[in-house]
Image 1 (spheres, rainbow, N blue to C red):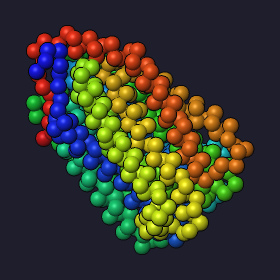
Image 2: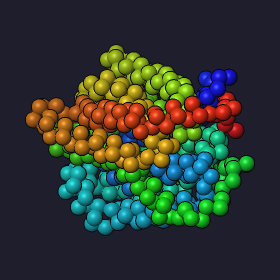
Image 3: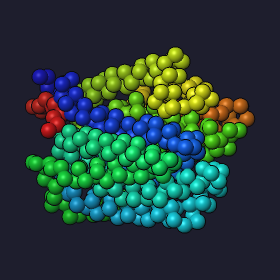
Length: 446
């Protein structure tokens, strides 16, 4: 082995990354499963639109807790203690669930859905009923994310995939069993929450032998954890605010309910296929040691991203997408006509999302979370500006929603690449040059 290299092999990357990719696939299978169930409700368009809006709000509430996984993993890998991360996560999760309960059970929900998002009375009723099942999700997310981070730090990625598989199975069973009631947006919310409970319990029970969770680091308190986490929380908050912003744009188009329903279906399909690249953030946090491992991990991540991009382009062919959407989601021809043209645009998701995830991981690993938050602000600002510019262009439906998402992701990715070359790559090159007696690192999951 040449001096200055800390190597990973294709096999090492695959052993570490395959369970994580499976986790993302199982996780995002949630969306097409629930869309397929809701599309079989008595009033499918209202059910799909109501759940899309309610889940977008819930996503904004639980999004800040998703960073706990990265914070816990990075902290444990750096020799920090686990308990301060847990205390911080549980407190924030409880507060955000309380806000969810206020939206679900008080007039706050009516005011928010009607005035801020701008939905009509029928979709508003469905969204409020869904929130009455979704409000515990932020606290469950806090528990799940903290223990997933512990497992990533211990290189135990298989239990994470197993927990997500259990979640997806329970979710599917509950969703289709409840169709006997006639369905509605609440059905998707009830199934989602039931699956979350199962997944959270499994990752909490899973053990990480050999990983020391408590260290002599009393000087690092909750305030320091909050300071490090704040830009990352802003990042995921804006990530989950993106579909809410796009929903608000679509709700003001000529045919809002159909546009929202079609956008929900396209997002479900596209993000399910793009899911395997979502864990590239954990690959760059856990596996990148120097410029050489950066090159190798980046190469293997690109292989995954382009494979998913090709698959999305394949199913975007009209002769394939129309029977696919009709069979999986039982969509009428008019809804397929609105959703179908957006799929080729959504084929850009895997590549752009993979760039975002990988380079965000590099900034987290190097202790520069501020750049992650700055990239998210740029993406949302770009989407808002683009929405204003195209409002009179006659573009609508799912094409408008997906187009805005792709435009914002492209700007964020370019920003992260540019500043990683300035702030992160010199450090990685220096680590390679200074390495003495390097050892091969092959990510192993147990």
